[in-house]
Image (cartoon, rainbow, N blue to C red; front, side, top):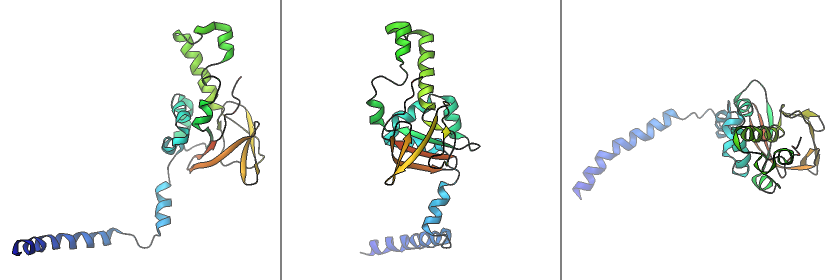
Length: 193
């Protein structure tokens, strides 16, 4: 019994020190919400897009397009990412780096060799750029260009946003950060040339 009491006497000063030092480091003048908001300052699209499991496939594609991944890191120009959810990409009739025109011109081996790899990379870039708007925020019905050069806008009906053309439902806005927003789409934009 005396050994337990002696152990408690040794631990008590340590617990007291921890309790008082925590008190000195807290900042009671800031609310919990203000502290959370402060943590988000300075984050970019590239910081947050990878944490979104619904759009993991698209996120991987963006990393393969250096101009887009650089834009996601930059704070000089805002973007709105129109990220198709994984299930929409999986439902496509072919992979985003495949193009029927390539198969018509080069046959079944359209993506063999370095020239095939280059074609696939260009097609993937076209797909990704069709899903990134060079502006954020943007207003409803405002026509803006994607990085791929297409004109898009959105409309709201009954509280739901739809990207046009194509009437693609926006499931939710996943992230709002310093250099833009990430919108999760139920479908895929028409990216074919």
